[in-house]
Length: 295
Image (cartoon, rainbow, N blue to C red):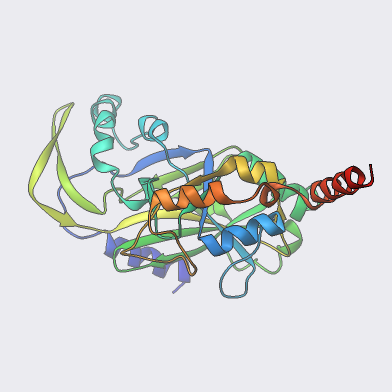
């Protein structure tokens, strides 16, 4: 049996639990992506002026979809009549409760770099693809106890032979890319269900459940194949940097973290200005200091 078919059967088994009604699938159009890291890796990113490969063979930089309130309000509910979708859409905020929608906390650390997807892809195209368009493939589907992760591989056309065994992303029914945004057809948006959807004709309401129900949740990750550093100007790195709480219960950060959001914010404030200067700017500062001493 083909691997992609076997994985799809496993995913459907994960999703087959008898669960109270909720909106599914839900189509999100995402224009921003994020890379969350710990205190240790933050300094490495600033020092090297960019992102290196992480984990295993050190050849991938990992990014997640940054889903905000506007994305949720603009989400579409396919496979419904216009009236049904119109009734259910305003209720999505009650159901988008999985970690994929929580920008206040992360399992990977306290420090989040957020980039427009188009800007990240354009930089990758120039730096890693010799000006050609990057290739997107269905890389892997990871199944955890309560999570389904769909991984999209992004690589240079020069590596087509190396990654030829992975299907092109155009073959996926769940994730697509139109050159400006990732379109994700989410199947499990809740993780823990506290509400159920009640539909009567073209009317939809949420009903709070007497007790919550655990369920799986799904997400999309982007894996950029790298050879060397994926570089950005330090001022851009600084502008894209923000803080979040670190999830103490599920720690996937592989490094040192701050114990609170306040501590993380203070850490950013404590970084010397040199942390956000390029090597050329530092040399200019030194030259200026030497000239002043000579005068």
